[in-house]
Image (cartoon, rainbow, N blue to C red):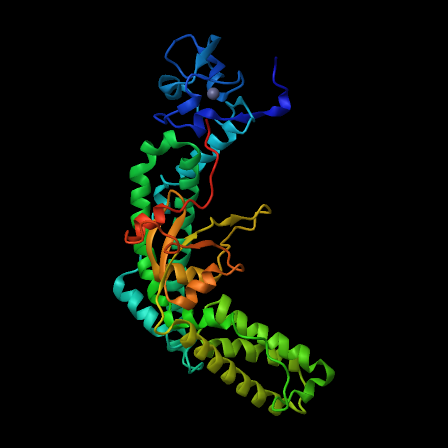
Length: 406
Ligand SMILES: [Zn+2]
């Protein structure tokens, strides 16, 4: 029986499978090719390969995919072989593509900022994203440099995480590739750890605990001491928008409560537009509101976390999404989730994309809440070997079973 054309993939095998790659179940797969008179020359897929143009004689051969054939496969993009699009080949090729990113080109080598630079940048940003004196050009520049230091480090860590998680997925699907990639995985894991450790300096643990508590606060309702008369019958709606902006700042963006208040302020000013009458009253009301919300959040933080046992939570870190429309990559994690992983990680397993986080009670509750992006479990709940260290407990959790290529 011949396989219909539509069920085949056209693959430049010589480019996708580098020499020395273990072939697992694909070892011995039969293909036909073309070669010049010598038996040791390159094997081509198509007659019009540029490398064959000057050949005096070309003959057809059948060959088995093995280590010696891999050495001889033509690497020109035009030499493409048909392989069955049966679920096994695409998984293998995806795994090879993911693993190839563990061998970066030289220009991709990134250098990390020094400990001293990171400490200085983190110290500056702990005072606020922007300088207090907006007219001070030097201060403005220093803050911009500090933000760039943090944001570059964050992008680097996200990129490294993505590399490790997609490679780990590939190795889970094609376990025979593991010996080839193991040393590289260890090398990248060490880089990820160094990047995470530096990045964690930029996040305040108390801010993250406040952010967790914010999720538990009830949405406010208009009361007599909030003078939003300027908005007329739209007042309840404006209050909701402001509340959402404040909540998103403190919770999703992991901003300190003082900065979340600035997000609320901005929302108020957008709603106010050019209105003058009642403006001062609305601004004063908002200041009272954000102060009260911050107090409630701090109270909730203390109630949930202070003096209560910490929790050991395992999370599965999702890879970045690549936009199908070419809009670059997107990290599905919120800033709060990124910061929590950076600050509280005590063990990580890149082969399964899982991490163990040792967190205050309130943060643990939020990680386990249904609204989180990361799949999460409490590693100490019903743990048989509850005295085991975090990496051993993490290893007992299998977040999902993946079908391996047989
Ligand atoms: Zn060729």
